Image (cartoon, rainbow, N blue to C red):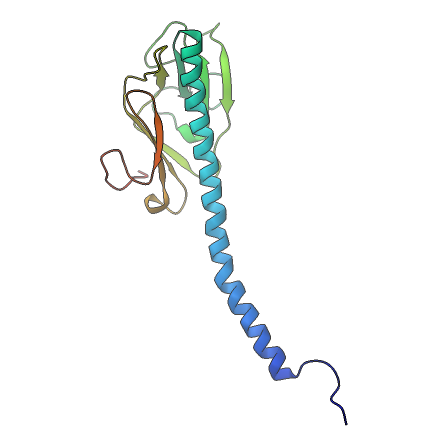
Length: 176
């Protein structure tokens, strides 16, 4: 007599245990992957803003500034959170800290980052026609995982940005 096609109960239970183990092991890894992708996307948007401001300052032979903005049209003021969005604008009056005044062209508005926060050591940053920002600035992108998984955009005095998992002095990043 021939055995009917299919699986026995022990074979089925063993297969289900292996599948459950793989899913249990894989889901947290994919969650971390998704968080890393979201953080990387936000860091890349900020890098885009820095490169835009830098190149427009050179092209226009003037000053172009970045500042935090909650409404996508004006600077939010000192102490504002960069994670709520930021704008790039032509800073005709070259004020410092930069404030977008009437008549100053808005080049781009970036939306808030709902997945985390941005800690910065500068209230605004401006680029001049010769490409320099004049100050070293660090913008740390943090999510709910904290400092261990944070990334920083560090802008040198020459205006060149770089991404790092350490501060400009080589110490661990801080999300506070």
